[in-house]
Image (cartoon, rainbow, N blue to C red; front, side, top):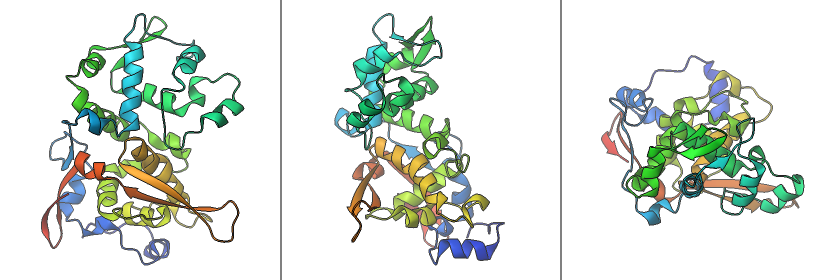
Length: 290
C-alpha cells in the first residue's frame, strides 16, 4: 500500500464515498515510478513510437499537428500578429481543416465576426504544442517549420508524432488552461498515476464523478466544496485532451424528466492500450504489464 495521505481521513472517506482508488493497489516502487515521465530513468511508462498512418489518423491531435506543419513548411511560414498569435487570415484558411472533440464551428462563427487564434481551440492548442515540441518556431513575424517538424512531413518521424505530442502535452505544458485553473496543475501533477488508473478503471462507460475518485489523489482543494470541482478538473485537463489524442471517447445521455440535462460517460478506446503501456507491480499480484 502507498503511504497514507496527510489530509483528514474522514474528509477523504466522505469524498470517496466508499470508492477505493485504483492506485492504492500499487506497490511503493511502482507508485514512485509512475511519477517519472516517459523516457526518464526508471520510468515504467511506455509510449508507442511505431504507429502506422492509419493508427495516427485516429488522433485528432496528430492530424491537426500534421496540417499545421504542412502549412508552416511553405515559405515564408504562417503569418503572426504582433502578440505572437497566428493571424486571423491564417485561422480562416485553416478553420475547416482542424478538428476537436465537440467542436461546433457554427457556434464559433456566430460568436466571433473575426475568428482569432485564441477563439479557435483546435488551432490555439496545437500551435502551442508544436512550439513546445520544437517542431515550429517564430521567426521574423512568421511561424516556420523546424528540422524536427520536417522529419514528420518526410515520414521519418511520423510514427513517433503521437508520442512526441503526448509527452509534450502531459509532462511539459500546463493543461490547467482547459479546466480554467481551478486547482492549479492538479491532477496533471500526478499524470502517470492518473493514466495508469484510467487504463484499469475505464474499460466500460463510466461517469466522471466516479472516475475522478478512482484515478486521482485528492488534495485539500477538492474536499469540502459545494460542488465537485475535481470532476471538472479531470474532464478539462485530462479526459478532453485524451479524447483529442484518440485515447478516450465520450457520450452524453439524456437525463430522465429533464429537457436539457445530460449525463456524461467516458471510456478508453482500444487505441489507449496500443499506445500506452505500463510495467508496474501490484502489492499482492506481482508484475502487471498493461
